[in-house]
Amino acid sequence: MPLSKSTYYYEISKEDVVAERNKEILDEIKSIFESNRRRYGVRRVHQELVNRGYHVNHKRVQRLMHESGLMGKRPKEKYHSYKGKVGKIADNIIDRDFSTTAPLQKWTADVSQFNFSWGKCYISPVLDMNTNEIISYDLSMSPNLEQIARMLNKAFDKFP
Image 1: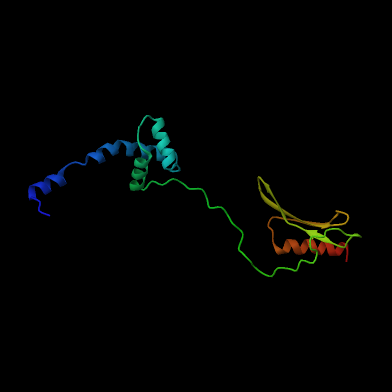
Image 2: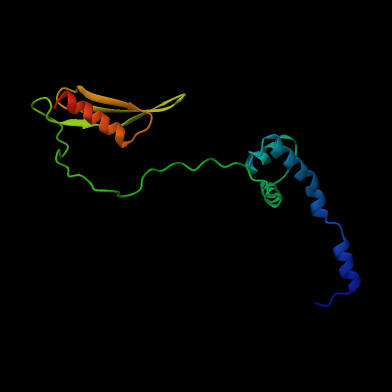
């Protein structure tokens, strides 16, 4: 591309007008971002700029924040415990028939989680399906195999 030497040096020595316009807004964006402990993202920063009287597009705020490396905190990824088919699936011998004619024919067990201010607690009861009586239970701070073993040992000690 034919370009004279003087034109080239004139163009590179010109001050960037857009950068000058963005300088004030970028300083305000940085002050908002830092005053909110680096948590605010583009939407909140843009809303705060509007609240402070700046008329600026959200895309401009997004571009300036991206170029400056300012990124707000994102929420944590939700925990998903489903792992697909793992282990052996037991045969369905009850076939959703929960009725019984006498006590101690069918038992059911479950693990329930309770959230407290100091942490989580897990209860694992064994229920007789005829009398709806709790045969045994176990409380634990973590749901593991030891809790289930203790609960079943208590039930079998009570009714050998």
